[in-house]
Image 1: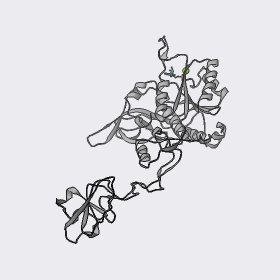
Image 2: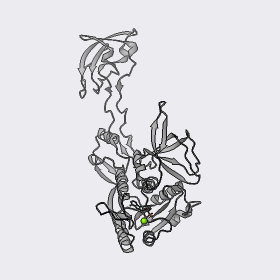
Image 3: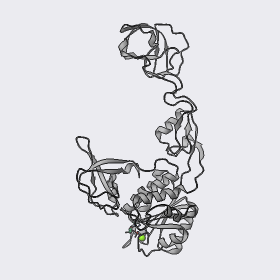
Length: 423
Ligand code: AMP
Ligand code: MG
């Protein structure tokens, strides 16, 4: 495993006490890149929903498998049409989806065909039934209504046999599942799901079910972290709340490193904090303690403990979610072999002036709306304190004010990260 020092030496301008968000992301990406890859395994397609492909899937067949009709109508050979606008052909047969036509079709003859049915050989065009006048076997239409090749799907038009149908690193969503099925594929190679252990630290933190006491608060971080991990498709191991106490912390860290590929803690990494979490991380692993130029967030620990990747997130509930989105999510996706790890951002106009100091990245909670001209606008949820979890509930997205960006004027466009796509 790479040491943090090796990576630090390679990054020009690396300063753990004043790290920009992009540099912290680059550092983490480099660390994950140097970790040994995980072996993949094959599973039945029926169980593969939301999993990540470990290798390209090439198509064993042409899709569609045959030239077929895209409409209900009459199939004919375009070259058999006369030069007049009024066309007349005689219908000599009927072919339904799932059937093939083996009879002969002479010049000037057509075949009634339904959507999806195999095109009889020699025929290349379909005139939809609603554009025809039919009397007995006489079928008439206007030549200008149809071009040669219309309403016919060619074999292999969607995917040709041997072509790459899905790429490694792609998540198997509903469309990908349907595509695999359409190819008749029953098994796929997928990446392993990371096992992630997480716990909260702090003497003031209560687990659900414990009696409230003065000065204590209920643990929300384990619930936001678990939710975000499950959305990513990780296996989760909840290790509870650990008090600021060396023996309990050591046992918990060692257990987590044995159990999990990734360890996430929250709390206890602030500057000058008198607790034991930092000391224990430093003693047991290769860990850097960062002050990141961001809001909310700022203090964070990153490193390795045994074979496990370790994230020591701040304690404040909004800071936990934001640092997860900015750092943990891309790292987990990268570890899972996903090719695009950065969430999609959209542009919206700010309804209000936003104060912002250049030299740090800010994530403000915002709500989106559209005006009568369909212009997208964003407005902050108000209170932006890093402990105000209700702001995350109200928000549609995070307004990302980038490192070098300054104040924002009303009506100015800003980047917004849609929460729906990243938590
Ligand atoms: P710390 O970094 O440990 O000083 O925590 C910063 C703030 O976040 C303090 O106000 C903590 O009480 C709060 N906090 C820490 N952990 C949690 C948690 N698991 N759930 C809710 N709040 C927390
Ligand atoms: Mg604490």
